[in-house]
Structures are given as C-alpha cells and as structure tokens.
Length: 157
View 1 (tube, helix red, strand yellow):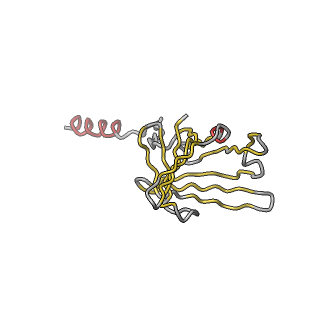
View 2 (cartoon, helix red, strand yellow):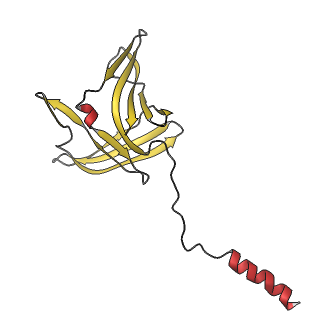
View 3 (cartoon, one colour):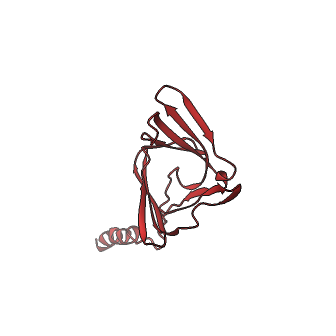
C-alpha cells in the first residue's frame, strides 16, 4: 500500500518541477523591424488625392521598432542642396512605443534640446499593415483645412 501512495507523490514532484531555462516570450507584432518612409498620401475634401513621394534625401532616414518597446529613428532633410540629419540639435533621452489597440499605437520620445527636456507623444489615428512589408500611419486631422485625412507609407528595410 505504501508503494502505491509513494508513486503518485514522486510523479507529482517531478511533473511540477520549476523550468530552469524559461523561454523569453516572443513578441509577434508587425511593427517590429526597420522602416523607411516612402510617401505621403493626402485625401482632399473635394475628392482629389495627392501622392508625394519622399526625396532620396528623406529616404535615407529610418525608424526601427524593437521587441522591448523602444525605437530609434533618424531623419534627413535638404539644406542648401545638401542632405543632412534633421535631428542633430536634439539629444535623445528615450524613445518608446506601445500598442494601444488593434490598429492603435502610441510613440513617446523624450528629448533634450539644450534648454531642457521635453516629451513628444505621437498617436496616429490608425496604423495598418496592408502586407508584411508595408506600414501606413493615418492621421484624420491636418493643418491644411482642405485635407480630409492623410497617411504616411513606410516600407520594411
């Protein structure tokens, strides 16, 4: 009888042992990776559509979203015919991203411009992935009163 009681106890001890090498949880979010801005599409209130492809200079920039919820980015602009980094005057303190819903993300960056730190929060109205290599960030508000909505399109690099 003692043998029959001992057998289930041994099975229970070994089946409930702690995992010595827990696997890191894999984050499978389509935003993870490096992206290059390709173009901007504006949908006008009168029904017209304006497509503006980024210049070769702007295409030198990219944004990389990492599994740990951080990101880093570089932007380029043309100044007097020369292509140069657009963010040289800012020290990056931190940049983070968070999924806020099915088609919703929040991007938060803390910068120092030499006069103190400031936070820049960006929350596109919608983020879609038409395929594995394309991301679109939609904005339904614009400084241009003729624009109904717009999106920026990024290609995975």
